[in-house]
Length: 143
Image (tube, rainbow, N blue to C red; front, side, top):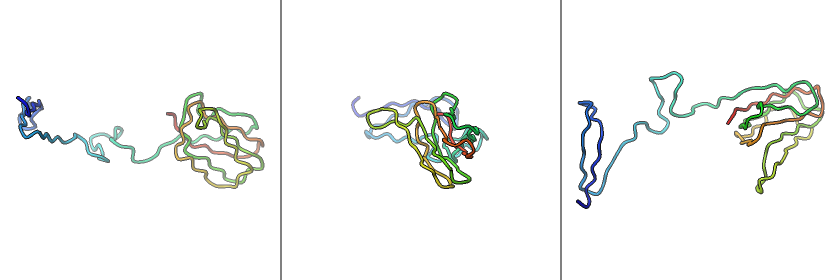
């Protein structure tokens, strides 16, 4: 019959399957979870991300390229420098619009937090310090 929609669902009252027919050419359904709803029945399985979680990794005290994410693609959340760097910090793994690998070099950056808004690094997140003594804390998470 044109204009009729048959839907099968489970009744909350009887826990049995029920058929519902709509002849008004409109069917309204409610999602089982709403946007930003918290899963109060579980301490580990939330419906939405409500806080950013990241790995905090200190770079080794060497002036060579270091693999921060252990060979896996990553989101770069930020870099914290407790003191100004006496050299440069190069971040590898970005791509330009043509899809070519591109590096970002922070030239003698000041102390502070450099936010990268969860930038997506499709290859392994790698960084290079030009001076070994600089302290660099990297906040990242695997994709």
